[in-house]
Length: 111
Length: 114
Image 1 (tube, helix red, strand yellow):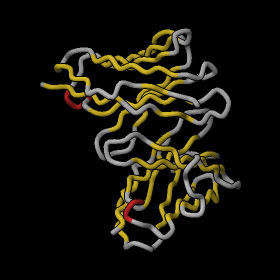
Image 2 (cartoon, helix red, strand yellow; image 1 turned 45 degrees about the horizontal axis):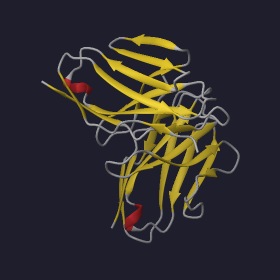
Image 3 (spheres, helix red, strand yellow; image 1 turned 45 degrees about the vertical axis):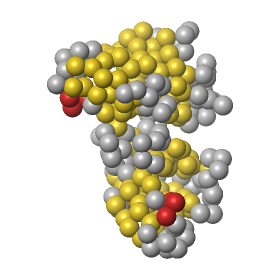
Image 4 (cartoon, chains in turn green, yellow; image 1 turned 180 degrees about the vertical axis):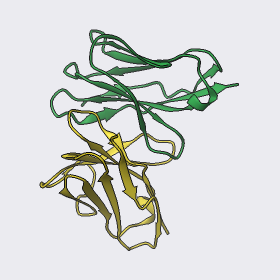
């Protein structure tokens, strides 16, 4: 059973702060890792993906991957109220490439 | 690029009727599409994986005779909820994969069964 674990939150941060979202996975064979943002009542939207150990930056977002420890994180710098959403971690299994989604972490950015 | 559409976005139907939901990849070909269901305040649940030209692979616990999936072309997959009942009311979301393992989601279809 492939598992992807996320803290459901909510994670509450003040506007302008750094929000840190974490995800752990069980399949050591996984090679790619995705972060999606889902606003209430809407479908998920791809934010970032990462394949290699280390950091990948895209604007205010940074994905961090540590395959040895089997975790991937998403940092959001200068958090804005519009970042308030549920963030889903998705990890395709190493064999079938069918993604397993975490339950998502609810982020609240308050003014 | 990588736009996925769904139709309809919202549907209300009577119990016992069937509802068809379309998922289209607008600017790419998708050999694989996925169908998800999401109940309020719950996580995405994968229902089935749809491959063009072959039968869909259903997740455990999903009734294939109730949720009919057809992936007739590289840009279109359909989900038909047959003999819908109130417990089938949910948010149905498709996603499509242009290649590799990145998938893009459609906007979702909200189904309400009266």
